[in-house]
Amino acid sequence: MSANISELKEELTSLISAANDLDTLEAARVQALGKKGRITGLMKTLGGMDPEERKTTGQALNVLKDEIAALIEGQERALKKQEMEQRLASETLDVSLSPRPETKGKIHPISQTMEELQSIFASMGFSLAEGPDIEDDWHNFTALNFPPGHPAREMHDTFYLPDDPDEQGEAAKKLLRTHTSTVQIRAMQEQGVPIKIIVMGRTYRSDYDITHTPMFHQCEGLIIDKDIHMGHLKGCLMDFVRAYFEVEDLPIQFRPSYFPFTEPSAEMDIGCSRKGGGLKIGHGDDWLEILGCGMVHPNVIKNCGFDPDEYQGFAFGMGVERIAMLKYGIPDLRTFFESDNRWLSHYGFDPLDRPNRATG
Ligand code: PHE
Image 1: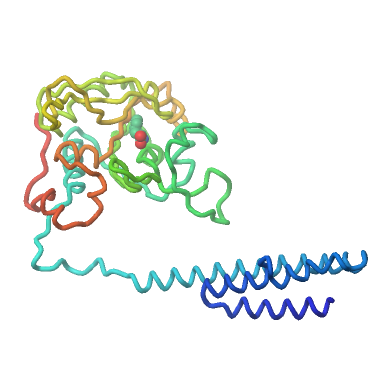
Image 2 (image 1 turned 60 degrees about the vertical axis):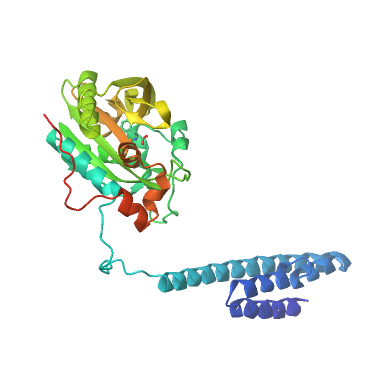
């Protein structure tokens, strides 16, 4: 029997390593481990053996089964990797090619909106800060007062990266940042306090419908200093929305909300009217949610190494696509990323247009 088993092992091993596509490998798997497979067939003969033989043969067959299953798995991984490499090689696209001369380029609404935001906040004295798109769990969650197991983590539909054998523990786990609030932490640690920054960049959540795409952009602000209070937050955000939407007396309201990294937390709405089907920003009897904000939680300041009794501040964050859609009347978020030239020539901006500047 044992001679049989080692012959079978050799035979199946060469069958598996000769399989150079996934279908052939699947056929080899069925032949070895399927219901009517060779190993399964031998297993069925165990019943007719005397106890001693059954024990040794049974053990040998189980070892063989595990070895063959591991071989198949390894071969499958190798074939999938090869397939991916072939796809990557055949689907390359030279993004550095110059645009076709017959198509006149336009500035994408995202670029335009980010320029506008940057110039309004620059005129209010904010400087620009940046951080990486690939983050670790500590910067995206723990440092922002979402301890491991905190229920608010679940709301972020996070994309985690495959485990890295070199990383040490939960805090180092890599992910695509789910918000730009990560840069609050990085900037405070790098620049210290007092600090007055805005952040603009890509963020990622596993979600896709008319108002969600897996990649989107956020604009985030942070001020930390001595004696900062909610009045400063309100004044700053009121000036901002009035400059951005170009409505001088745009009404605003704050509603209580919850974010782990701010306390108290609020959502800010601007006045609008939905009469006659269209949306008009400005006066009216309706409200439109525009951003999340709040006073920075003492734990966040502590986590960055500063004393929350001495330093306080506020933070806010908004979706760039959302405020671009509202200002420019773009109905579907997904169209931002379809690279359709007809869309871009309709919603895009002339390269020589200057972004709005803050007035006053
Ligand atoms: N990070 C929050 C979000 O993505 C937005 C926010 C930023 C809220 C800063 C408060 C303060 O939803």
